[in-house]
Image (tube, rainbow, N blue to C red; front, side, top):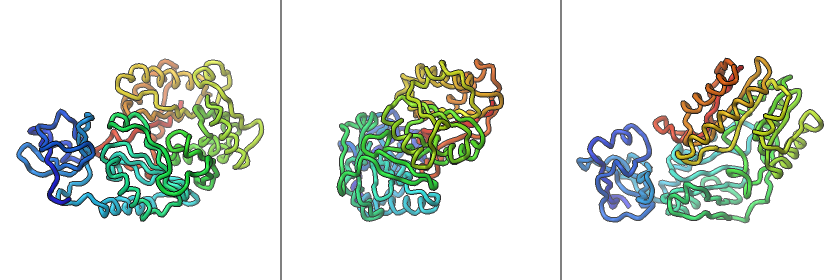
Length: 394
């Protein structure tokens, strides 16, 4: 309620990043905490002199003890607050989502002012994830606001993963509203049809963040031979096929994902020897294959789950890029991505440059790639931009 928030006071000079818009306060910046607020409780952040700065979620169990909600320190974090945040998110998507597209990111955590909440829109089904203590504590109020704002047939929860566990919660999955969705939903994206498993698929079933990059590579694929590595359910492959690629090879280790990739290609009219789907380890496939390609796409899963994984993951990213460069024709294009939170854009650039040097290639940067606009991040919060990529000519 208004005026009843406990106060978190910062050490001298440690308020600067919050004032500049960064949404996190780390434990080392805190001087004192009034009372004993529970994990997920809303607290008032103040500078060392006691000046009120912002309201946010508190959790003493993690290094990030404060997650920004609003700079309006007189605000009430209640049902109307969540309705306003969701209404703003819906309004933004109405301006951003292209025609003939039924699937997109509706809420992108801090990027939409609700830290720890991700909501993906799949037609009449919303798939949500509550990963912070604050989001968990407000789960019912947020779910009610989602029903009122988006009016879905089903809200299905997939609250899981390491970040949720670090906040002190076990994984939880199931329908919040309505019945559990069918195992496979059909969505459209820029007029293409895709089958999506929102219950057991990776992330919430589809890599919605790559929509604009798929669109870009479609426009670059005409007449080219394409290798789609870590192809999952064939998103890039279907786009490149529609773009007029002469051949599209999809390589993925998951049998279930490959079966769906075949169905997605077929659903859009692409069958036959020009569109093979290969079940294999990408690292091994690139080493064994002798085929050369005009365009290679590298969209691997996150190699780095924590900072301690960085040396190993950096080696993995370098190796996969090095091997891919060896399979490119002279003048070929490489679209390479990392979705590891702990591999920032500058580090990824250095890794890919190192691979090019070892391959004896001169890599020219054509475009810096990232998530679509339905995955907004605060300009002051680069950590929120987990997907990064480069389109290179070699």
